[in-house]
Length: 190
Image (tube, rainbow, N blue to C red; front, side, top):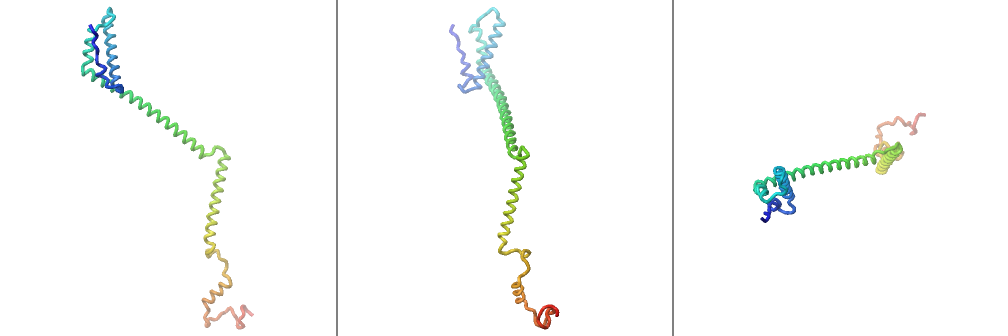
């Protein structure tokens, strides 16, 4: 009697890239191995199974309900595997990101904060000198801008020429008597 070929692989797997289908086929093979083990346990005196022995298993495994059941179980197994793998990958990425961030932060802080007294002193001195230089530049700029028109508080006592021009603009009236001059026209007392 020729052996009956089971076309279950074609019913479970849609193509080479169908991972869930391959898992479903491996579930079918697992069921078949369990069937053979149970058969041998129930029939210890028989070594090989005949086609007739497999007929009930093949009829059951070819039903649409069993095919759908194997496909659903395969998709659940694949989904669980991908979830676990994805969670592990996310955890690894999070740990690597945290380690990289901490390392980068530590390196940045080392650059910002000197490690020895002399480095700290040198940076402090350099920043003080830079600040003093900038302040001197600002003062020089103000003096340069105001050199043409100095503020009134920087002027010294008015010169004689300035006094004369002020007096010529505001002459003293003739009827006002100057008490500081005597009759001879000289200043002071005699």
